[in-house]
Length: 298
Ligand SMILES: [Zn+2]
Image 1 (tube, rainbow, N blue to C red):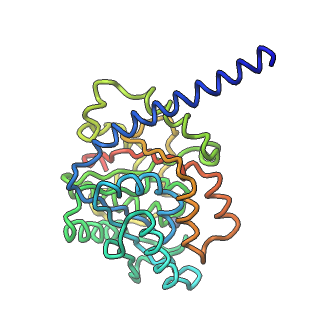
Image 2: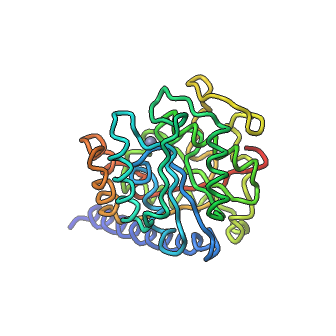
Image 3: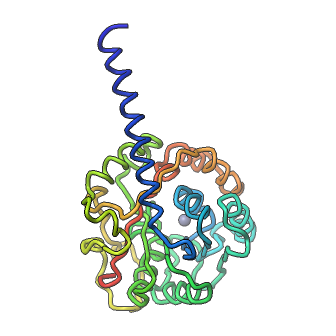
């Protein structure tokens, strides 16, 4: 074996060792995400959002906390709403969320579709009602780009931000969007996300993640008044934040690709070829960077 080949082997071995080491450190930090008795709700827009985007965080948090799923629409864009709602229940069970903790709405003003307008006030009120009913301590949802840019995802994010402003005692987190390139590099994003996560953190803040929201978290959010009705027209969408512009508060990492695949298989009505590709190549099957929403600036 020539020298350069030996060098490559050592470099790969070092990257694997470093990645595993940082991943273990991440797990220790993530234990501070919530108190043992805290209830956590994932607010999604459509059945299958949990499978496409949130598997690393749901699967980790559901092991130690009571997790809930609140799906704001039953995904009836193609007339499959009832089927998709049942698929979501089966998918959630695989992730550790029992059926009694899954709620799928069929609200006339929250219907699935890129041209459907979801009022921010309505979304915030729905979330508030759910949080009060179940005594939820943490809310997790999309950021203001919604990962895929789907208007329903963005409307969900705006509703969560409005709710966060109303209820500062409930901590709300957003799943961070990223550039197109980063989005589809699959498992290769694990070392990149870990390196980015630890290189942008101040050691003194590690012990107080949940208490120190970053004041710049919402620099691209729209300054809409509290619960002001608004639409999420395309021209009103906030700009996508640069993936390195703000570090996440927590980073959930998973190498259980088979779980993402199994969960997506439960959405049989949606498992078309491009969704199969998405599961294979999406970073969100492996990493979930969550950023605390600053409720004072939502
Ligand atoms: Zn969706």
